[in-house]
Image 1: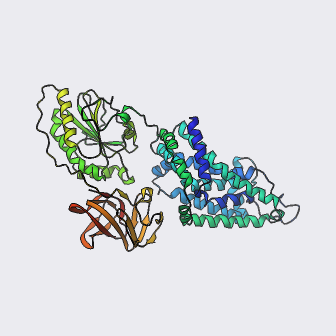
Image 2: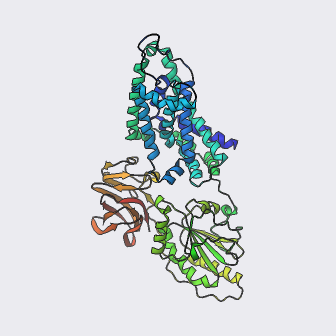
Image 3: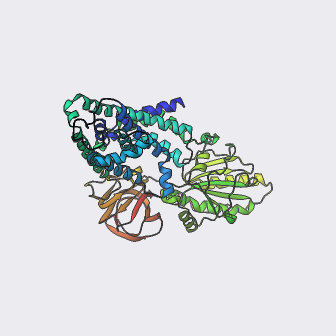
Amino acid sequence: MIGLVAVGVIAGFLAGISPCILPVLPVVLVAGFTRSGAAPATSAADQDPPPRPGLARPLAVIGGLVLSFSLLILAGSEIISLLQLPADSLRDAGIALLVLVGLGYLIPPLGALLERPFARIATRKPSGHAGGFALGLALGVLYVPCAGPVLAAITVVGATQRVGLTAIFVTAAFAVGTAIPLLAVAIAGSQLADRVGALRRRAPLLRQVGGVVLIVMAVAIAFNAFDALQRNIPGYSTALQGSPKIRKELNTLTGAKHTSLAKCSSTATTLVNCGQAPNFAGITNWLNTPGDKPLSIHSLRGKVVLVDFWTYSCINCQRALPHVEAWYKQYAKDGFVVVGVHTPEFAFEHVVSNIKAQTASLGVHYPVAVDNGYETWNAYDNEYWPADYLVDSRGDIRHIHFGEGDYSGTEQFIRQLLVAAHPGLKLPPATEIADKTPTGQMSPETYIGYERLQYLVPVGSETRDKPAGYQFPSQLPLGGFGLSGTWTDHQQEATAGKDAQLELSFLAKQIYLVLGGNGTLDVSVNGRHISTIKISGPPRLYTLYQANSSVEGKLLLRASPGVQAFDFTFG
């Protein structure tokens, strides 16, 4: 615990001196030497005393920032999910609050009104410190993206509903660390106001200037005006937060129970014993079971069970499904059960109706467990789609396989375990399903959304969460892609606008793309029109191109407005 808290404080401090604070830095500085309040007095007797140096207002600003920042990290994603709000709704709320506080500086009666609820809580008259606290609340919302790998680890904890004391302590430690440099900036602003006599005499003017600065900064943040500057400044703090030692500490936050499965070899050529299979945990829905009733490892004792982790838009999983389905049909009467644990990669794969529709469309007839919270995934220490865990009749895991391929080997292990469970059992012949696992070199998986964006050319040219115009690069290296026309790049996908086009330099035999929305997609390869694909319904995997052998080429896509592009995979 002490090590993790230290990591949190250090990572928070690094974030507080990173380029990520650029948008909020002027706001914190202004907050240190301005304060909202009543309208300027009309006589000397009625005048407020000049601002004095001290920690009260800077602490109020940073206190509000720490509180909102911590609450958003621990509960923000869950609140957004429960209320079905857009992912950037909290950011928009923070920007709106920042504008409102700025108006409070410009309009003293409004400033007093904004401070009144906080003043009531503190059972005192408004003094400007309450306004600083409200300002800090807005800044906390805008500061969340600065948390880097620490935020990623804590967000996983929140999303998987395993927020405990460890996560709370580390979040608080990060908030304290990040508050140190910001508090120094706020105090500097306060000291500046005290030491410069002219500033004392012009306090009303300073409040107005501060209000204008807050509003201007809010508008700049809303339009992502600082993105290019942040991209061009080295991300040293993120690199330090992501060091192996710190990442190892952060990984313990997820709360996953590390069993012997983490050490069990997936390349063994004989049956091994990896210990008892974890039970299915956190399953929200069951499909293809009698009455959609839940299954458990204990209830399946006496049967040979294949626990198959998959997700429906994964091309690797789709190529493996015919083999898994064939085994289920061939050996079900002999005591063999398949449980397909559907653990989503994209947000749309959390939707149960989508899972049901694609399960039926892909011809999956064995039981499917919906693992939206990753609890079963974590219980098995899993990291891959697809992944197979073969469980014997006593409930022990005897074989593990990750990814595609070696289907005949897995089937032979299934047959061995069935005979061991039922001595003298006569099995039907082994299945004969063509293995379509790619064997040659091919382009890497290519995400279009900015969350995992790697291969956009030029690097860092994306505009996040708002429509933007793009132009194809003059040169496109193998594996890279470029955009043209209007696109809106979101966290997991890019949505086409007017004249939207995408060009990809590839090496592959087949090209697949996860698409959503409604519209059409014209597909051309090396200048030749291949097809026009109609896009409708929930997002799913579409086949764009197939050849007899792996080739290099240029793929050109012309998308009608509203089409969503998520992720390229190749075969």
